[in-house]
Image (cartoon, rainbow, N blue to C red; front, side):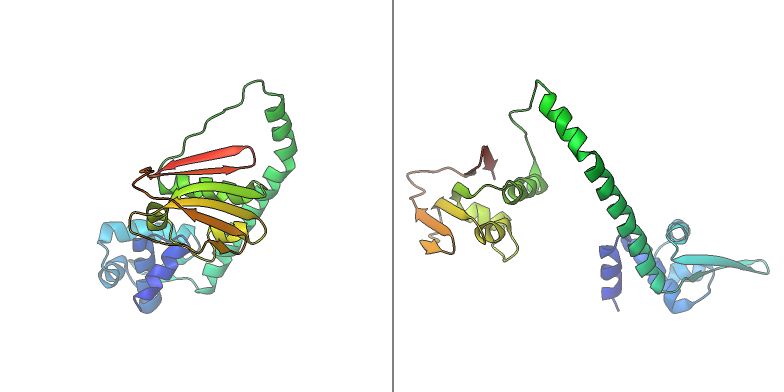
Amino acid sequence: MAYLDKELQKIGLSDKEARVYIASVELGAAPVQVIAKKSGVNRATTYVMIESLIERGLMTSSQQGKKRLFVSESPENILAMIRDRKKVLEDQEQGVKDILGDLQALAASSKVHPKVVFFEGIAGIERLRESIVESGAKIIEEFSPIDEAYKFFPPSKSDHRSRFREKNEIKLIYTSKTGIVLPQFEQNVERRPIAYSEYPFDGDIAIYGSRVNIIYY
């Protein structure tokens, strides 16, 4: 059941926490050295992982004579952990909503506003792309080196392009070093190719509403 640790990592457990928890589920009540051997995590680290899992409500301990035993709590506690986390996030979201108007008023009264913001890395580009969807703009006008764009962000039904063109319009000029040819017209999209040899630019420029995004891959 190697897939179990991957799934547990998706909900926030570390690799070693997941391995220790799964070993504990299999073993039942057991001393730390047995759990360590079963999980493949060294004894000292297993102690740390167990303490973390106890804090999460996923393990507990008991004393039998001179031995301290550790046992996993019911797997249903994982759902309880997720529900608790969801409640915290919902409370945080509501807290932000409650003060958002005041924060926006403060921002509007400020005499100095940033004109240029820099983002770095894949996460930064993803945030810029999300800002296109969130902007409320009706049209994106974009220049894109399509090979680079697709290498980092392959097209998918859930990406910003697909979500934007469901209701809005995209006008795209693109280059391709490898000879990619895209349909000229598609759902709310108009595309025009130009030769990379004439326009050897490896960046992406998107204009939407009052904003301009410039990405250099």
